[in-house]
Length: 130
Image 1 (cartoon, helix red, strand yellow):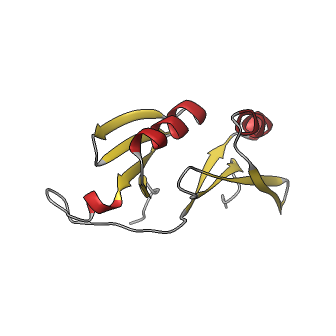
Image 2: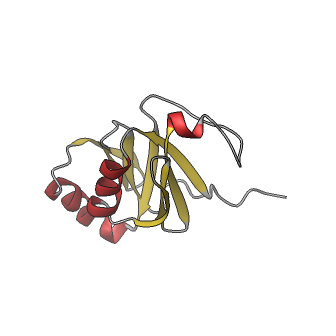
């Protein structure tokens, strides 16, 4: 038995419309689900990014309660050929790139923040493969 992948991950945000504008309009992720005042979900390749208002998901209901706070981190994987294009897209969207890092073996990544100060990363495809 093995776990194949992380299918979805979650961030806790304070403003769903601002979150939509960032992830949909600036990063190009497609909205796949939304409940006004509670959450918005985005497709990210084969994965899903869940964005919840923490105070609402903490209440629970149909599913167990969950919540969090603080500046969380996640990384988006892009093809090596599109890496520079993503850097340009982020910069042209007026988003500050905080750092670019050389991981060795010819793999690069760069870091930036979303409106809730979560640390996002764009990584070259294949970086953590065997």
